Image (cartoon, rainbow, N blue to C red; front, side, top):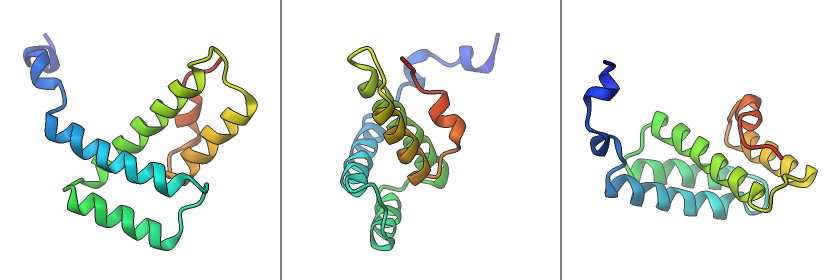
Length: 109
């Protein structure tokens, strides 16, 4: 039996504090990415927010992946990912310093 299976599944669910931290960080990402550019001031704001939320670099990278996944699911909600939506996903991945494979791993139409 794997170590993961030895842990009760409820223990592996995110804690409420983690959900609140993620929601707070996602709200900031929404605002920062609105113009498809992360300025130096916005990057500083993201870093300060991550520090205030006690997010490690690994936490932030995980949240960036989660954010991209949520965007991909929203793009596919109507059953098709258009070329414009695909470009948007690619751009967000680039802005969040995610590898190109992160977008390819997201839902496609």
